[in-house]
Length: 464
Image (cartoon, rainbow, N blue to C red; front, side, top):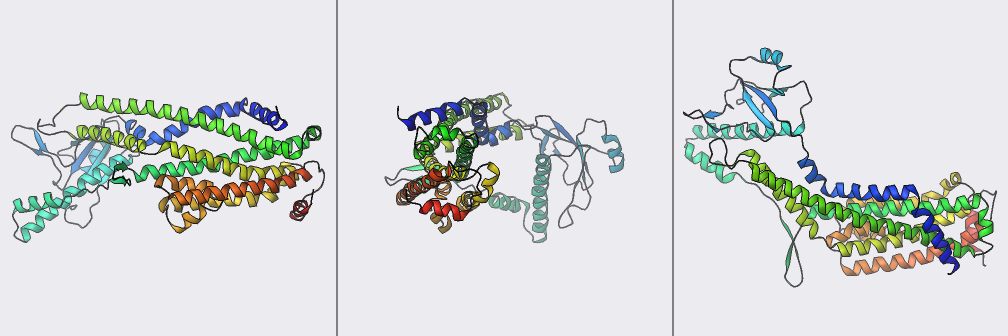
């Protein structure tokens, strides 16, 4: 085996056996899977405790409409699977608040008498616990819709419009717009897509590139510093050339990163597949177990509608994920990870060879970390406008392209942009490895001297 091969083997075997590598390999897929299924999981794991809310309606505008048979056929404040409203008759606000503590009621909703007449009404919700946002939004949405209907009917009477006409107007103008996106192929085929999924995927891919490059590049730098400080480097360079040692370290750590990434991909997809099956099956079982009618037996209840909507949302999310060209994304991720890592790891190795301890590295870190931090800042703009000028140019510049191009890729980047970006990255990291090798060769055996940028420039100009 070649000398570089032996160094690669040593670097690889030493790092994959560390506890930190094993722990991160296990925790990483769990984190990524949680990010991918978080919306569905949070909806499924929401508070399932039934909350009964007492209602005092001094306006008499929100009371449920009860038929002659005693059945409720219209309820303004609609009950849901987890919320139930109980109207208190004959109670004033002060006495109801005194009896709230220790009662079966989670909260007390007070609707003032003038809420219909004023421009904007303020209802009051009293509770011994901090009410959650879902409860507040549900109450506000129900009340706002009913107040709009009341004011519309009132204005209609003033204008001499019949109640039947008003109901027809309300039915016609009530609108709900949802934008469905489709990706068109050159052969005319249309595939349903999701802008939101592409944005999330681009952000995660870009951030992973940033994390991997910074994490594994720093490992190269720390490894060089440790060997230099312990003077073991003097023994090593007696058997191998400094360039061989540097390349062995860089490639060995790169293989560690690739191993961890591939394990993350396999485990993450496995967890997401299992989670998809469990979540969708749970919702379908809940839908089958729920009753088919409402209080009157004629229409679906709110809980049935919510369950049905959840099932549709789960299927929609996972269907959108399947439309992503994951082989292309993973392949390009591997290229940009390797290209970005080789580019920055060479600079990290050069810094490690130039200093005697990690504290001295701070003066040289800005030229390395600056482009990486700038990429994270640009990434926010690139997600919003992946084909804009800012995203375009920074996806070509080699020091920022590994992150910004990964953000753009889920949005179908023109092939010429990808080719230019990849070519520039390859040329730049080859040139950077050549420069770093000149610094590494000189600095690896230099001790006790505070190195400056001027000194580094002399090393670069030195002809071997």
